[in-house]
Image 1 (spheres, rainbow, N blue to C red):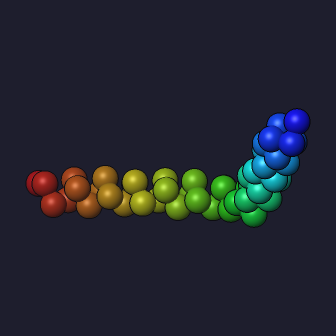
Image 2: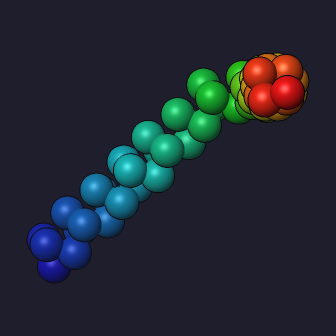
Image 3: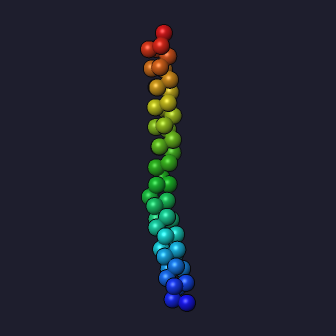
Length: 52
């Protein structure tokens, strides 16, 4: 029984840690997606310019 309780506490702490990380990362997701799009577009333009 003690081992099961230990696993349950570990799972609960892990779930809380994942939730806390998501709370920190979630507000940055739109900025990260925008930055990724800008980098891809600039890379495509640079690739086209240097290829010709």
